[in-house]
Amino acid sequence: MLRRRFLSTAALSAAAVALAACGSDAAPADGDQPKVLIAQPWVRTTDGATDTSMSAAFMDLTNPGDQDVTLVSASADFATMVELHRMTEVEGKKVMEKAEDGIVIEAGSHRHLVSGGYHIMLMGLTRELPIGDEVELVLTFDNGQVETITAMVKEFTEEEDHYHTPMATP
View (cartoon, rainbow, N blue to C red):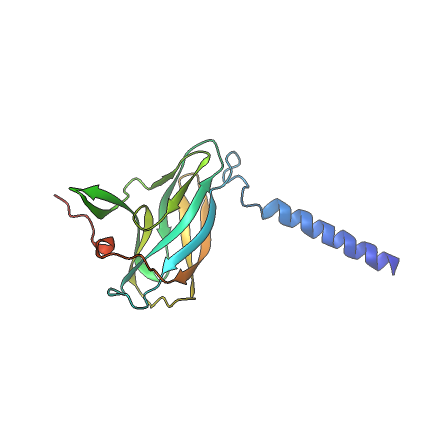
């Protein structure tokens, strides 16, 4: 009995050490810098949307390191095209444009991907996105970090017409 209890305790301790070693969100992506932390990811539902061929993903990105990191791309198996976008003001109007250089998360800071700011645009959806569903996104950063995340599909209550109007090129 004592031997079984010892073995169980030893096994649990070994498992805890292994999980702590490989499960830390702040583990270095390339051996030098901590990883970008990803929190509260969610995707806008297509339920009730005027245009059900597109949606957007939002989340909080935190860079605990001492060097800037850039989100350079995202992908999703339920969209034929995924782009990093930002909202900007042109002649007093908010318009959306592709973030050609990616989305920078400054050292020791965070970047909130939100409506009216930086976000991940999901276009050419291959299926509906009902409220409560979960979807996977793959995020790629310029430091070599690649993360597959699960995002909850939620209602989007702040949508405005300009949200889906891309910036016209002059």
